[in-house]
Image 1 (cartoon, rainbow, N blue to C red):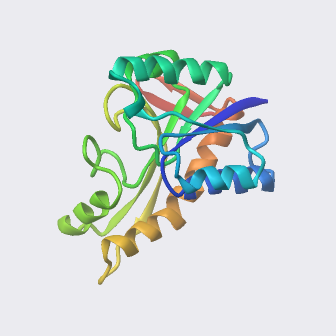
Image 2 (tube, one colour):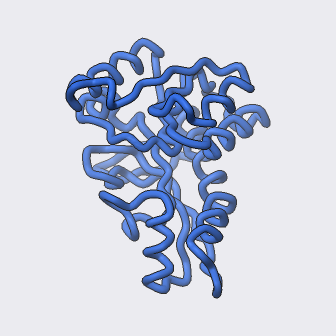
Length: 208
């Protein structure tokens, strides 16, 4: 049974999708053992507490340097014996120490079909604003491993979502969450916990 540690900063809707998947029995090879927030007021902490999941808070501004924060977060993740780290709306950049210590063990969910609308600065509503500005007919979400290139790690799963006439960024964001993010993130976690993901030369092979 793998220890899953989820990193959050906000409302925790993707965390809730993971909790729901765990409770429904679709994630059997792992268990959410801790939720770590960069924001002490994140509602995601309440979601975790409501399900008896231990929580921690670690804020970037409490550390003088990025390096000190990076070392502290790495130490906390080791203390929690994290086998898998899931970024579920975590709004603080991970440093090289965390990434190198947990290579191909950190999964992020991005609200677009990478390599579209990704990279530095592409998060939250901006992703959907840019998709609408470009006039794409299809967008979606991507579950991927994290490396030192922003949104550049090996892709695990993707799911497409239709863009509709009259969509606002907010409406599109909600559709992408409901139809893609909340589906493929738990699937990616399940695949990892069942040892079904193989990384070969920067891409993944799903062993199912």
